[in-house]
Image (cartoon, rainbow, N blue to C red):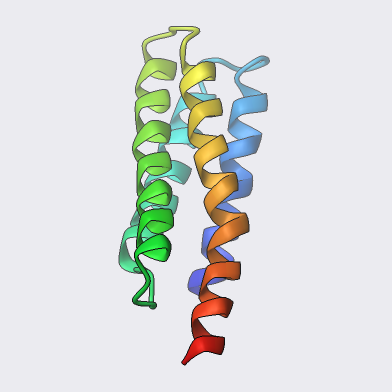
Length: 111
């Protein structure tokens, strides 16, 4: 159930970023809700492994959540910099989402 909510909140983050072009009054509220849900699920699901690289990648995920929170704040203030902050968060999240499962599999094979 937690995984489904996590994925839905990720999709809502993308949709609210697109929706901002058409409805700038509504999109920040959807973004705030979805980023809050995404961040809470990320924080309550820590990295299960012991490797330092895996923990660093999980910290990248936390950093991306903080950047998305900052982007949401900038979205509420009608600042255009929210796009840059959101892209930076997305890059960290994409990298960690791709490499973290590989690192966990490698760690499980070594055990």
